[in-house]
Image (cartoon, rainbow, N blue to C red; front, side, top):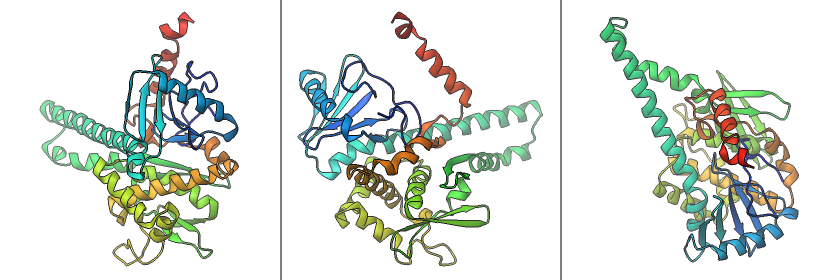
Length: 337
């Protein structure tokens, strides 16, 4: 079993409760269909486990879920918290909206909260520096008036998404680059992805395009969304009956145009449509895995880059994150064993 998240490349953690499957701190399982996911505690994405490793683990999760008293359930979805801290999400036969509320609601809601915290914290910090500078005479009132420009420089100057192409090139995208992302219908009927870097746009197709757009969309949707927006996104997919048909509709036609009338710009889509696009891509990827095509995910799993605005605290350097993780592992619980 993979020990790192295929989306943010962070450790999935360990548990000492499910002996048949010691990976993960939050496990989601569907006994009827024999499916098991490890939910990343960092980015909230669901990592499907290989089929040969899930059957006994699913049975163990079902048994543990039924034995615990600390649980909440609806008719179709349940959550149980075990004493060691492991969380179990039991999937029954949910309607798409209910399943999406559990699967995507936490993810998009967490992004929204983080975006608000980061934006508010940065503005407070910037305001303190500017006001303090004016008070001490270091900064002038004219510079105070330009504080909004300083914020824009910071927001637009940081890398948000890192892509690794099939020919091993690394492409780092800032906010202005992401605004130029385009998705279109390829000549072979598949998906074509246009990535803008600077003034030029590079196009990708086939499996590479699907893999790369799956990395780009969380960066575009880094502000997340409220529950009602998630529900609207789910309804859009339901209208077409299948994520694949929704994807086909999004990429065809002359919609989502820029000022020149050029179609296919993701940033011109309504916010719920952008969330729905990310959901549909995720579910389409998982469908391939369920059909025995886990080998297609190997590259994405092994080379997944950090999506800084989603998985990490953008205001802390990597050294601080490593320090926290190192000392968490060296804490009392670790040393006592």
